[in-house]
Image (tube, rainbow, N blue to C red):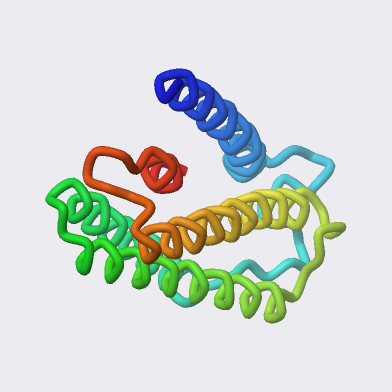
Length: 167
């Protein structure tokens, strides 16, 4: 049964990869080959893009750090180290919440909306999809944290934690 659950989740993750790829491809295609309808410039005239060295860089660092803390948690459960697993999960949950807060701040500071040209629509589609992904992943990790806290996982039986980590 665990093999079937893992296979189904792997197929779900693959479908998510394709969704992310298609949305990000729309952004990259529009930025690399802006057409006449948007004035042959990207972003369109009148839209000021975010400084990539501010909140976007900070959120990237937060995501990379959360990957490290989540790997630490997974390695710890395999080593039967419950305390480090709890600490790694708690740190990752905290980073997921911080990421979501910074994305909300980024949306509040935006000088454009989803209806402002291809830039606005692809920006909000990409970041919104990713933000939802982070929120759902954080929720999965919160549930896993409480299950681990209640001794529902062992070093050999923690499939839902592994799938939450994979997500």
